[in-house]
Figure 1 (spheres, rainbow, N blue to C red):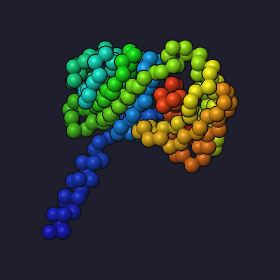
Figure 2 (figure 1 turned 180 degrees about the horizontal axis):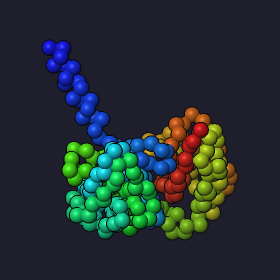
Figure 3 (figure 1 turned 120 degrees about the vertical axis):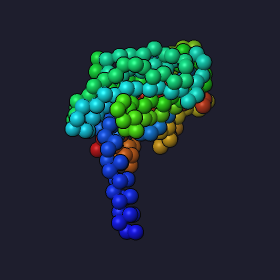
Figure 4 (figure 1 turned 135 degrees about the horizontal axis):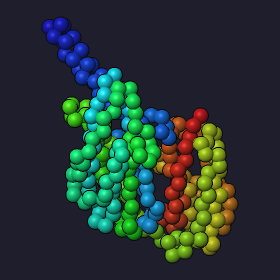
Length: 251
């Protein structure tokens, strides 16, 4: 009986070890998360993720991509690039391009024009609502060997900021990447009822909130207790997300 259990455990271990296609987030150097949540104010610039695709096998693999809309808000655009090809914003739930990429053993497709591991793009086109998309890259000769991630896009109303982009100004953090503390400047054309700076991790969980006072100032963000990785900080005015930017934490 023990031999049977040992055989089962060994087979499970071998199966797990065989999954050696990996998507890496260059911002952290780690494997991608299973789910990302992106908060956007309607009218935001195109939101993009760029990931590296690694083949940890010693042999080459022929890889294809799939994009599936788990949920979709009509009018929003979801599109992506893989290998040397970029694909339009098809609204059908499943989009599985015919193009494939042959990736040699031990090689990678870096993030960047012409050699995309996986580049995801999203435009809200001023349409409010939520869209959830799943991307999967897989070995055509062994479809069980794949890597997937889900991205949730949550688009909310812009409020006063869209009427006049100069009403609210939020700077980039300095320094960025940050180790212990970083600062961000803000400037308001008129005093809002309520304003704060909210910091979210990659899965959309708020990890910090800083109340902002006055028409202008500098907010200090203590990141000493945050894990290394990519974060987003948002200026929230009168309960509306006005601006969102990236913050990298690296000790």
